[in-house]
View 1: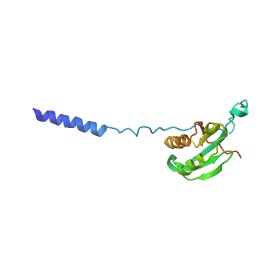
View 2 (view 1 turned 120 degrees about the horizontal axis):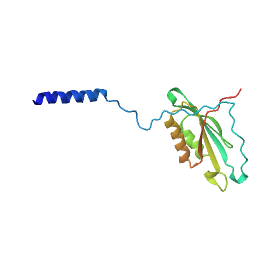
View 3 (view 1 turned 60 degrees about the horizontal axis):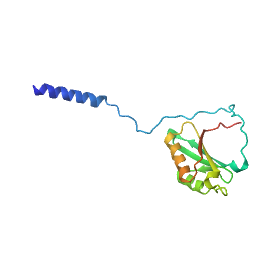
View 4 (view 1 turned 135 degrees about the horizontal axis):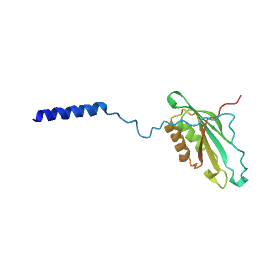
Length: 148
């Protein structure tokens, strides 16, 4: 009488083990950044008063195989570096950016421009580097197409 119940229990257990589908790691989001056409142009904005203007820096992120970071670049009023190899070098360059007098890091705006196939977790890592460097104004934008 117990044997058929054990047999059925093991069959059910076997069924659930074989049909169980493991979920992908939590936090892995499959997100593609929107693409920008060269013909798209935003409406003109009114200029800001000089005391509200921020020094604008752009981090360019090129992705390689599998959506990982292949090459980083940092451009702005005081920096023009197109060949940053790793996050440590990027962090050092972000910390070396001079802060505007009287406003400190609040006077600097950083825009991360990345290709649309970059792994979202790497984008978050770069945003975290910016926050660790003391910059609160961090923006995202898709990679611009090269105009010929």
